[in-house]
Each structure stands twice: as structure tokens, then as C-alpha cells.
Image (cartoon, rainbow, N blue to C red; front, side):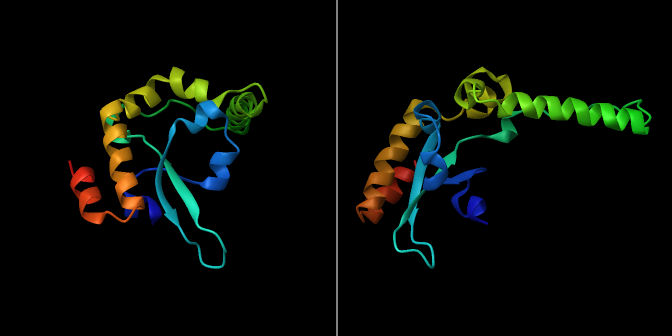
Length: 139
């Protein structure tokens, strides 16, 4: 529900962002500071700006694979191998973010101007300047 409320596809808490490398932290955008029921301190929430609508939909016909036990096992092995590669300590999420063509395409609409305007709007919002923030954020 929070992603719909904020109009973003991915939300991360302050706790998650604190575990990221500096390079990855720069991929996040601070979108709010909220009080969570049952906690003493407000928590910052962040999003990762990705526009999945910018990716073309590939029309692929039915796969000509008979899903025998052997083929299911091979598929699981392949997926496990991919996952293991990404779970290694030397795997750099931020570098993958920059290198992956699909992620680059999904981030293309978020320009430096967008981040600058949002930053100005957010600062006004955080300071209680609601009308100014609304004017800036609705550009």
C-alpha cells in the first residue's frame, strides 16, 4: 500500500539503506520521515526510482520444453547458480545497477533536474512550508 500512496515502485526503510554501500545509497531518494506505531523515533523512508513502463514488452512464444524431472532439476540448478553469484561478497549491487541495460532504461526519465526539484520540494515539505512544497512538487 505504501508504494501506491507514494507513487513509487520500491520503498526501503532507513534501516535497509544504512546497510548499503555509499555508492548504492546514492541510488535511493528520501521521500518521507514517518512515525511508526510502537516505535519511539521517526524513520526516514526512501525509494528507488524505476519506471517499469519504459521497458518494451517482449512477445515470446510458448517454450518447447517438456518439463520432466530432469529439466526441472536443470532449471533449478541454473537459478541457484545465478542466485549464488549475486550472494557473493564481491557482488556490487550499485555496479550492477549501472551496468544493467534494463535498469538504466527504467531510470532514464529521472533526470538531475527531477532530483533537484524534488529535493527543493522535499526540503520545503520537511520544514512545514506546505504550499511552497506543493507548488514545486507539482511541476
